[in-house]
Amino acid sequence: MTRFLITIILIFTIAIFWFVNSSKYVGYIYNPRTASKDFLASGYSNLNLLAFDSESNLEKTFRMLEEKGIKIIIGPPTSAEGEMILPYLKKYNSVALSATISSTKLLNSGYIYSFTVSNKFILEKLRQLLDFLDSKKVLLVSDPSNRQYSDEFKGIFSTFEGMNLYYYNINSLKSINATDFDTVVMTIFPKDAAEVVKEMKKENPSLKFVGMDSVMAENFVNLGGQAVEGVYIIYSMGDFENPEYELISEIADFLSKHKFLSADQFKRFLKTNVIETPKGRYHYNNESIDREVKIFMVKNGKFVPVQVF
Image (tube, rainbow, N blue to C red; front, side, top):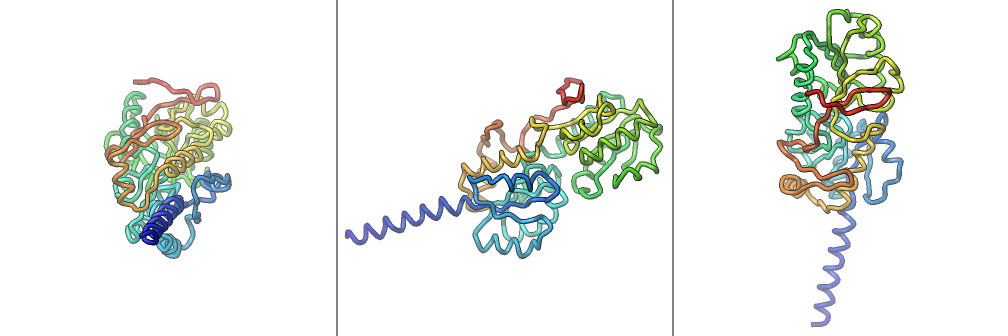
């Protein structure tokens, strides 16, 4: 009897040890050109991150994660990368929790989740802002490297007249007459957005500019200077200096407090529980986290929240 009890206790102890340690392992997809690489270099210790570059051999990587029993992955940063890994998430019944993906299509897939609000709700706020600005002719300046994100904003053309322009570099603007438009919407990176504002204002100083969440970063203001004063930004986070890094930190803190061993367990949790992080309490609604979508304006070199309607 004593030997039997010792065996049971030993098995139970091993099971607990395995559960506690194995559930601390998560996959981590980073992009060397974004803050996701900076977070990896920070030495976060509450999770064991099995990291891989978004440009790595995905079949080999996901097979390795499967062999280790890892079903939860942090990342990737962009919607384009999300579309790349989606077939592997389906094949290996895994889920990805991204800091910054907002593509409605991907967030409706059942395999990719995000701490950023879905484009579906951001687009609603954009339409309201364009109505408030009395926009008549809109130029959408889009990121060709992340079309899965940018192309969803073409939905504004069901309501507003205008056209889309993929922005590769400053020469992309040569085909555009700035005086043909009254409003410019930008879904590009902060550095590129600052260039667009400065260049187009030279030709049409009365242009109104709206940046989406991809534009929100301190270097947009630093690089744009006086030219970006008065630019509107639609944004759903609270950190301005390094939003991607802060969102990844939120995700890591959340996952470190919960032991998800399967994709189905993770999905059930999101459907029925409140997510608590040091930044706030959230839940998922219609495949999107319920962060408030806010409007900011650049004033005196700062992002200032504004109530415009």
